[in-house]
Image 1 (cartoon, rainbow, N blue to C red):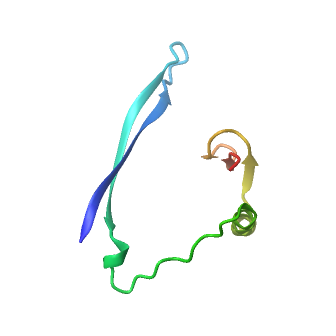
Image 2 (image 1 turned 45 degrees about the vertical axis):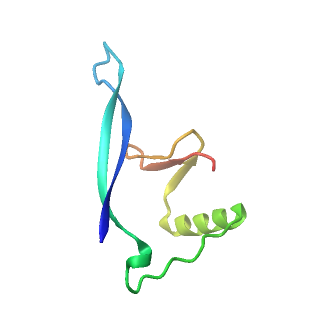
Image 3 (image 1 turned 120 degrees about the vertical axis):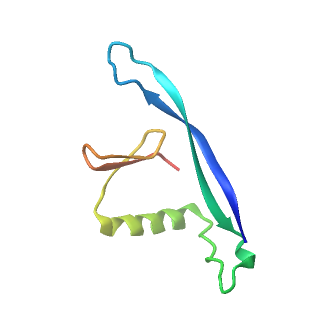
Length: 92
């Protein structure tokens, strides 16, 4: 049996009119149907993720290297910028 959960947050937007720039908060909600893993026949829990930071970084770099994406480090949030096809990543 599944349960419905709702994820919600406020998105900050900036008005497009340059004469009157202002930020507005827009509510955003998404719902998901989730299952208790213990109740799903044949499901195996994934292996634990590496605990230390060096292993996490090595695995992450190994994943992204063959993708040949342009990753820019810094800032305070992660996002994709389509205009120059770059991924921006903050520090851990």
